[in-house]
Length: 417
Length: 96
Image 1 (cartoon, rainbow over the protein chains, first blue to last red):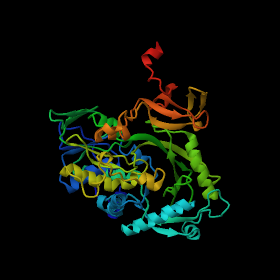
Image 2 (image 1 turned 135 degrees about the horizontal axis):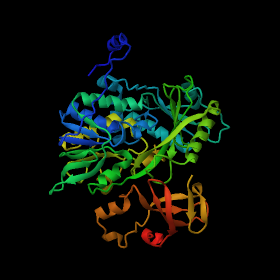
Image 3 (image 1 turned 180 degrees about the horizontal axis):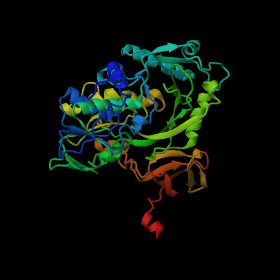
Image 4 (image 1 turned 30 degrees about the horizontal axis):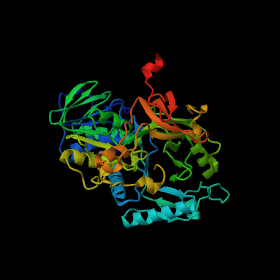
């Protein structure tokens, strides 16, 4: 496998950049693996990479029903931040941000992680109080977050409208400077290339159709559209389809799958320096390096597996965007799409063991899983390798719903986040 | 936008409605005798099917009444709507 470097780019330039090889193999499935990861998005590929690189498990496979990164990894708005209220959440998400900071170098793949800052706008007295509480909680937990006045917010993001004649004027903002964006496809491809290099088999167009359990109830094999694969350990990172996959093993989950929509504008010159989020009037916006404004809308109100949603949901978000950033009123939108997000009752993920021995799950990320890709993958790999949780994902069990230890970011954020 | 047929008011646009989650989850008759596993099942666990889903809707900006619906979550097509308290329709019988 060719290592990417400036020298290699120059060397390939001598032959017209025609000598590059595919970045990962397309092997035939083996009859048996030491572990199988279901789901070839960033979370699943990352788990395979960390299993191979940190736990020495190299006889493993990732199975993906479509193409790599074609699910929510390729459908999100790429926002990365860790300013969550509760210490458990801040721990997990900040673990991710720290991994993001070194990821391009570790993978030898430019994931274009850009710490341009994430600013969350407050529009009501309630918002101000809640966000200031978040700022204090984060700083106590060692996570950067600071409070800005409307004028300071406008200085950080000049397109922002802070006039007081808006329906919901900006009363202030919480800014996490270490937050930002990354190139979503590159995350999947970078992990895939690095995992493949360590011997992980990546099996695309391979859908799980069943999970086989032995007489003791433990995982024995997975049935797929490319045949039966024997394995003692299965890790499921299937986002919106997790209920379906775990249903094959008879495991019921506290998940509901909703469509979440996003859209991008026509590409323009750099006009937008950071990420701005408004939970209250529901607007999420940043500008990609390609120039498109990347806009996140809300979830539809009903559960669905369609990967699309109602146009009125996108329209609602665009109305908020135009109010906050009047300069975008005449821009045209290029594409919109939906992804299926698996939402838990407390809006916190489930990363850990299941009641079935040898079956592990990483799900429930709801509307905010991209930011956690490295951290989720890293702790899932640890849990699979050691059959025990990492201290960081230990609170995020399935049993917390039974035992009453919810990590209630739903109440903390008041909306999906 | 979906068009949803309220069993009381007829077909109306989706924005008049609120979604109420999975239908036919009966509140326990004798809550104090329920074990922790049963409470978890009642409060949190959901079928979340890919396919036909029995779910509650409320015609919030209309008659404001709850009703149930059968909808296919792979197409978002409503197969049937029916009043609260009525059993889930037997689709084979509906077609006949």
